[in-house]
Image (cartoon, rainbow, N blue to C red; front, side):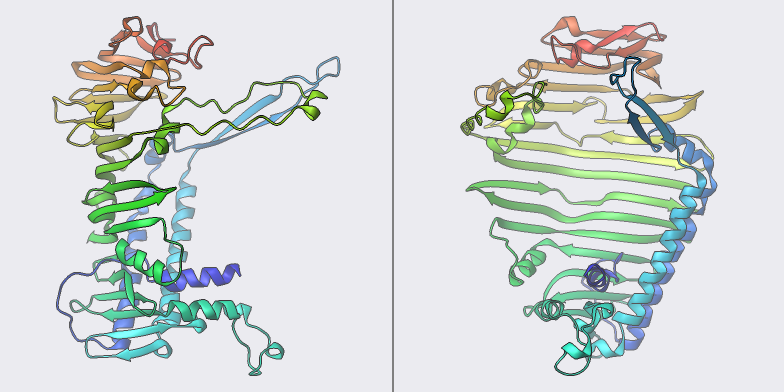
Length: 526
């Protein structure tokens, strides 16, 4: 059964890592020529990507940088020990740190290459073959993928149990294939490029379109078509009122040995769902690319970028209430005893009564990470939360408002470079974060909101023209400039850390309060 599921996935997606169609005239094609071109394009672009990334495993400096910023993994184990009296003592905990090494990256690269070869071979030998060709015109070829493609040959039913005397596929698998009526329609927008539309069901809904082009591979998903497909196939979509927008995953050859993997939001995404009679809306603005990974083997440069825009979620307060309360899931420790056997079941607590709506708006989330081989420097550029104030409102009243560098373009740049065994972080032009909190507006409905969230404004900022800090264990050393934190509601929590001093933090909150503001202090570096 597992292999059958894998086969279905490969058959539906082995044309994967593909791109999107556009409104262009179709050129003449032949089914055999289009199939060959599609598989050749996939093979060339995918293998070119693997080859362009060779500098990543050749360069040890990137691995060192990733290990510094958390790329390494770790594991801990504990064992009970016996005291001299024979009673059990506290367990001894030992931890190991496993850092990334060049051989780890090379193994991953080799495995990816083998998987890509298998994918292209499956496309060429099992999908786009004459036996699957259903119809053909001068500008298109349509392939029907039935049970002989979608069902696993290794799970054929023996002839003795088959009425025809020939091996047959599992009946459930055949039924699913007949219900899907899966087709692939090949067209060519220009010479040497092939588009593949996935047609599903009797209505031939088109939720996915692939492109296998000479310079790019990609996949475009139409969420409205995907919802129509799910409804036709009988999936439970009663709670989904609306689903719309288009996403694109694209692998682009910018030049020889220079590739980008992009996730694009081509048109704004929107979903409307209902749960227990209540309506929840979510949306995300269009952005291209919304996420990008670029490997430039010529410049020996790696780049990762994020650009999410205008995320909004609107719904009833009851949906968000638990997110505003501190975690209190742990019960007080007690020794088990006989009274546990006769203790009555606790009465269920009454369902809280909520009213009003929450409007959560994140203006954006941006940033770019750049690494050049053998430089030992990571550059984080354009970090920010969009071009406007991000906020959470309750019936038009502000619960939270977030601004970063509001007077200086709303973005900040960071440069991370080694400083001995630590990492130096240089800040440009400055860091100025304000967080206005007013959760008292819902405190009469939501119990357990921390006191320091009820009505306060927190202000974090750096001072100086070239502020820089060094990240050390459990402290932040100020190299140049100064760091400040202020609380509008509690001046006793204010902290100023001048150059040469360290920002210190307690490992755990005190028993009297969970207010993190009073865990920060300025002091002599340890």
